[in-house]
Image (cartoon, rainbow, N blue to C red; front, top):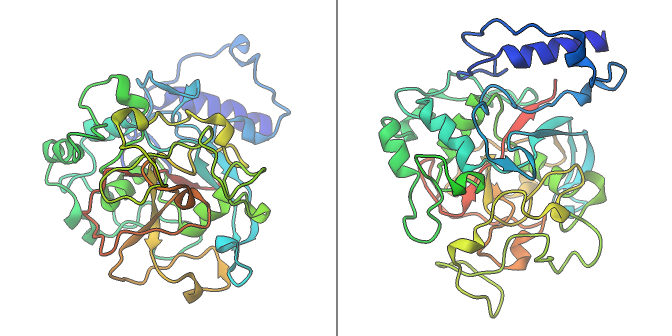
Length: 354
């Protein structure tokens, strides 16, 4: 049966040509798969675990993307085995997390352009009601009211995503050198819509914290080891200061060169191989920013209670101090709405386990 699933997966990947808003990222108009002879399968270990088949949306949404992240597809996703840990490394905040998948890299400019070019993420083409749900959390899918915070059309989205025309001007309408930079300036609603289009969903704050902390290893820095209280600049993109950010003493003003391509620091990867869980850009979470004591113990939990601080984001960014890059840090911009844009906030998608 495992061998059949591997061959079926390979054939399916070759067959898909496009992906509308779906939970499973299935093509709306698949073409016939090309003929595959035995030689084409010679490199497939039919006795290996099923995880040998890529778990991310390598196809179809990444078709045509030539820019690579760390020498591989920027769309790679990795499994995070379920387990128990303490949120914020606090024994008073125990949590269990079921197995899920998490993108290896932060969503890049190139990936987001594919979404924009597909005409998605606007009031004209919002996700379907209920799509992008976390299979463990009821009522966690897309709600029609979220569309109120999307731009009117593709032209408006393309313009809005360029919210910082001077310092961190990452997005471009055409392919170029910025394609492996993390996308910024996207709203929570656009981040949610993108992940749904990409066959995934937004991670909960607990899922993200679990992955960054290495589960029960309770890492202070995602890469672990050494003096984790002092974040290593050779492993994390951070250290400059811009706007009203709180940087370390003596930090130099940020320049565009400080905004680095995803996967630039492979030695900073987390326990399960995820890059940039600290630094680069903050990452948007599914749930609201609240006192974590509100839900404890936490079993595959997310806090969906509306509050004036808005949805959470985690992971630190290039222009904030070392203390903000730690897995225990929780920093939110007060009163963020679903259409707020920030030039150092991006996204990484999660995916339900098969």
